[in-house]
Length: 521
Image 1 (spheres, rainbow, N blue to C red):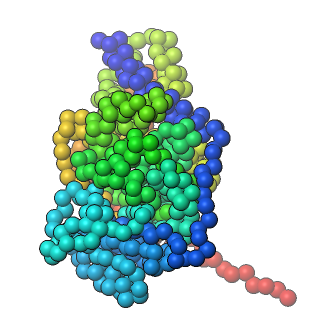
Image 2 (image 1 turned 180 degrees about the vertical axis):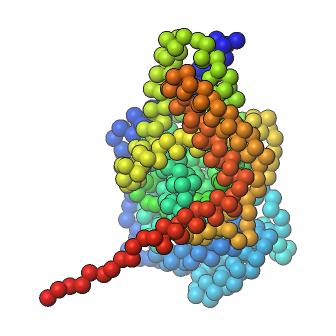
Image 3 (image 1 turned 90 degrees about the vertical axis):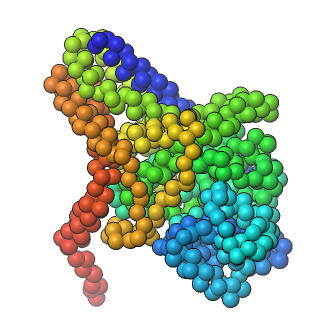
């Protein structure tokens, strides 16, 4: 029985090493010389600027919605060449707040429309589609379609800078074959907590490494659902927005690029946004993204491979892109084996397994850690703080495995679920808190399984340490830390936030006051 357990366990990690080597391949692609995208200067006369439609899909975002409207109103772009659509599906006070601010901006000369639908069919994708083509509003009257040649999209928690359009549009104007310019996400509340710091590590790697590596290799990129500008004709060429997956942005991205239309990632253009401040909200977001990617894979993998115009390299990378979340399913299976494997390892001669431990550490672990570290350096973070976050990032990735494996299984089995919004709370600084605010994220029963697996892995670490198997014990410690962190923060979110707030308050109270230096003489 012991050999079978060990072979199964190491076999699972051999599969995971493929994903580690893929991370290494992405890093190698970064070494390719970047081909500068063509751009043109905007016309000297503002009257000749292209007409841009800005779509702002909103659902129950009372804390951040007007902040977004104010940011868009501050665009350095002529009002007569800007159309703003507030696509409001809200069912709470957000609609009234938005209606009032829209009236104020209209009085200032903005072409802004507060659009409400009769129902939320298609969720965000449905709202974006109706905004483009027009349709029947909540009041029964027909609404005119969007007028813009280009379409910028921002989620409610984003804060685009005034020069966003002036920095992104020149690329689309210079190259008719370009369908999208995607900006990089920045993070308003990166330093709010350990959870937000780790989310930033994950997202920075996606943008700084994956987007740049794929573009340099000529492979498919993806629109990230926000902070991007579309050429409207590119959306229409692929058949428009579809709501048959939870990740309508990824779905449309692949369909557009299969039409031969290219994307450009603008790394130097950052758009700040708010990260989920609470574990359940973060897990709901991750569940949606993981499930949606598998739904898109079910929908588009065969058309991708049958497409004669897509190069083999792009097909392979596109497949890894869409199926990347299968790794969570493998980790979840391995999680149940930690204690049995630790017990079995004690009955096997260490020389038989030490090579496997070294293989896992070298091929499976190091590329992933390098991937996160290099991404942090590419976005301007300091080396030492970034190094200190790496073990926690690895542990959190493991801790998400049950949550995301469930999403992957639902996607594979075709189990349809609605779009679950991630609450945002207008959190900036470390002292800000979401406690007492009206939105809350739903809990999953999987949190109890996470706690159980964390305790099992902790016991496995103890057994491995007792037997002197420190390399295997290190893996078990990552499993224990990750699962207990995600499980306990999910079960007791308010308690965790209060402890974080009290810790911050205590640190602020004990910090010596800053005394201004007086000039002498």
